[in-house]
Image (tube, rainbow, N blue to C red; front, side, top):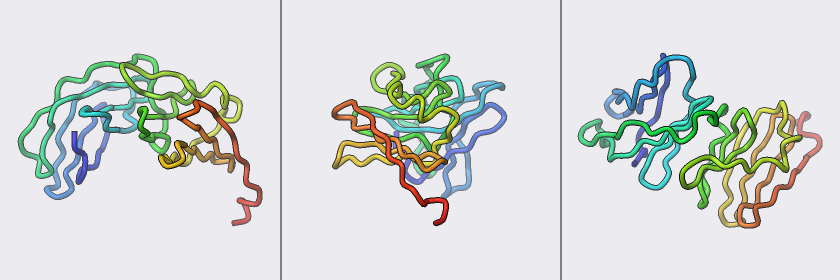
Amino acid sequence: VDLSGWGYETGGGYIGITGEAIGSTVIVDDFGGGDYSAGLAPINDDLIVFRAHETYLIGGEGPTNTGTGGEFTPPRLLSGDIGCINARSIVRIPPGIMFQSRKGIYMLSGEGPVYVGAPVEGALSGEEVTSAVALTDSHEVRFTLASGITLVFAYSAQAWSTWTIGGLAAC
């Protein structure tokens, strides 16, 4: 799935991919009401749709940047109780996609989400992730929190650390 030149929008239980060049929206699927959609992420040749409590996979070529051709497959449920609550936490790294769920930080690789955030559970509790950045040269993901704490995941070692930088409130 090539999402270059496309954005996304959600509302009323649907998620759509918007082609800026033609001002149109291709409805990926109407998921019904209830849960909100938190974001999209490409993985391999598929598209991951994150909702607050669910994670779906959509395959297929999808439309071109002009909105023509291609179709998506029907959504396939990867998890019925793990979803993403914060689009700013979605980050793609070579092993998969990391994101913040209501149960902590997960990594999606293979067939479903895997909990990897146990070592930083206390630091993340009640916090909002304000950004997530992949530093592939150093094999790290950095999640910044509203409090100024940075959670660092060294994915090659599967190890977490935390950084606190003082004086940020004065900046």
